[in-house]
Length: 139
Length: 131
Image (cartoon, rainbow over all chains, first blue to last red):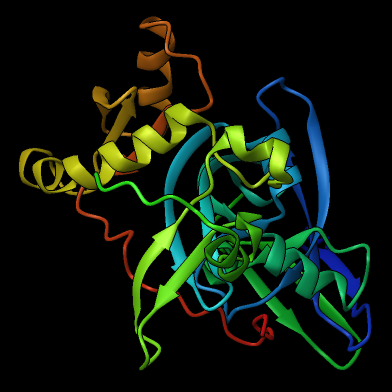
């Protein structure tokens, strides 16, 4: 029997309940930080964090842009999740308005992961759980 | 650039300039955006405020964007610092290496990809936007 594929499986959390994932990001200092972020395939950006997290984790600056949450500050972040094949720099944003919105559901949440992130893995959910797995072809 | 002196009424309309403000016309169309400058921190500006070089590089990015899109292959990574293009490479990791070699270690170096539209208004669905 084959072992089950590696996956991260999380019960919905918050009020209202939200699907979420735990991301690992590498700070410029080389330290690794884990953040719980809401999984939102309606978000067109890989990652949106609060400005405080951005100031700790941003590797390089990126263009600012506007959204229905107001201005989003751009920055490049380093994903450090080799189990999922996610060891790369990604363009993300910071918005305290978005942070406030996700924290209204649960104070544990530190941001919002979007469709570009989930397209790099396999993702799914059922009545109780949301999960991600490495993309097919990832060893 | 035109300079406008803030009186109490205008400052109040701009919500004390405690963060970025959009100026709209009567129809709700955004006609301008105002970003507080860091030395306004004494007036209570938040950590969202950008550093001066960051402001400069955001402006430089908007100025250089047409040239970058014309001169560099689509998707190529281009770094802007202190108003100038300082490096370019095929991947982010190669660009990082080049920037380190040039001693450009600042996290404020602005990195873009040629041909990517960063100006498009983004809608973040399924979350409630602020009022």
